[in-house]
Amino acid sequence: MRNRGHGYIFVDDQPENRSDYDQLLTKVSAYFEAKRAVEIKFKRLGMLTDMRKRNQKQPVPSCSKP
Image 1 (cartoon, rainbow, N blue to C red):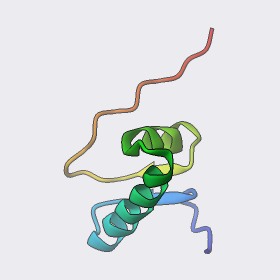
Image 2 (image 1 turned 180 degrees about the horizontal axis):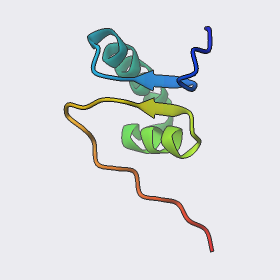
Image 3 (image 1 turned 135 degrees about the horizontal axis):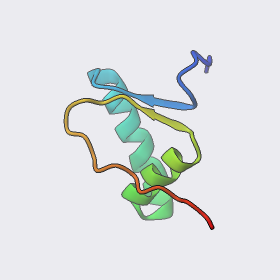
Image 4 (image 1 turned 120 degrees about the horizontal axis):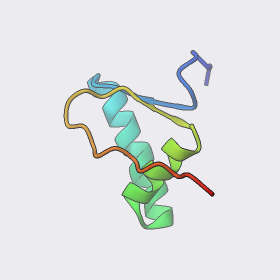
């Protein structure tokens, strides 16, 4: 997989990208048993660039440590 500067995981509104992302999330979440938790973890680790405009999920809460 070639890095195109979008990060490890990229999703936008293109059907192919959404489908690939959904498949990845489904497979990983089947292992960890929590789809939303996996998505939040990807975002917090800076592994996900989510450029979707339609059907936006709720923003991931910030993780600020004292």
